[in-house]
Length: 128
Image (cartoon, rainbow, N blue to C red; front, side, top):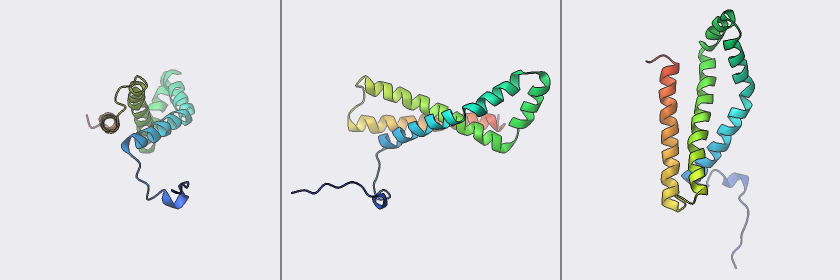
């Protein structure tokens, strides 16, 4: 008779998660990141529209490399959450449910969100 057991904490490093599972976890992480950074975004928005003096302060604040990395993390979170959200909507419509299509769409979501994030990073850090 087969024995079923739960995965132990030490077994997690041996367990290989499929691409669809990785995209699902990153979807949750990106949603949490966007939620946690709401006060930061509201602060930036308030600083940018209050007055001309506050806008100059906003520009100098956003010019700092660490702040740019935080903004880039927020950009990635939005783009990944958006792309994977479209994928999950398609799965809800029973499109691409089989294993191969699910893996292909998961890889496409990762490639698309990372490519768009790289383009935004190039613009954010002044490469073009």
